[in-house]
Image 1 (cartoon, rainbow, N blue to C red):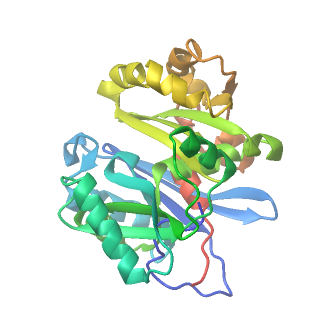
Image 2: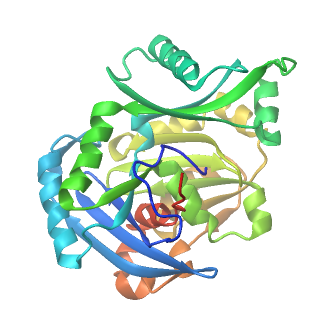
Length: 326
């Protein structure tokens, strides 16, 4: 997805500096700065720093002041002050959805409609909401999914809107954390799109056009998504303590019936997560496709210890975002 949350500051259209991906987890910060030369990504900087797990509750940072202290130390040590940065929110803290609205509405009117929709369908989501949206064309696969749910496609006077919403307070605190550390937040993404971006590097163009499933795990959570070249069509995310229950729910008859329509070609997984993925491949006859995205990042393997190679995938996917001028 090209534009998720709006860029928060202008960038000169004549310069494309390396982008720093900042992935703040409940127990550590992972940083990766990438620079693309022709078709090859080069690692400019990579670092990690652990901090007490007490700064987070149920996968959500609640002590940004402590997080900022650790991040500031990293930024100073690596001389990264003033660098353009991209961050991501975990999918379980974000609402992402398509909605059909009448054509011709103003930006303000669309925002009002989306706010009303969120208040009605997710009343406990957040007191204050930050929303980003854009009109989207209905892809062939998405249309197939929706038609299977008896969606009426006859109305030409409706526009498909894809919106992303999150808690304004949490987002503001996240951005302030980086600004205090001396970084310039240019992009706010969602973790499932960062994962889609970096895993796609390991696929051929033909494979990217097909349906792929992806399973990723870190110390705190497990993420599962189904995507094609254009978009993420489905995702679920669980805390590590809820993983077994989450996978069980995912494998029920209703989900299996839904995803039989998608013709998933393969389940992408890092070698470290192969055991978790076996729970899915035991039920669905998808080929297990072991992916090592870091093989396509020049200088990555030399900078990371073998048992931590998957730790920086989110930061890497963020650093691959294209920073464009508005």
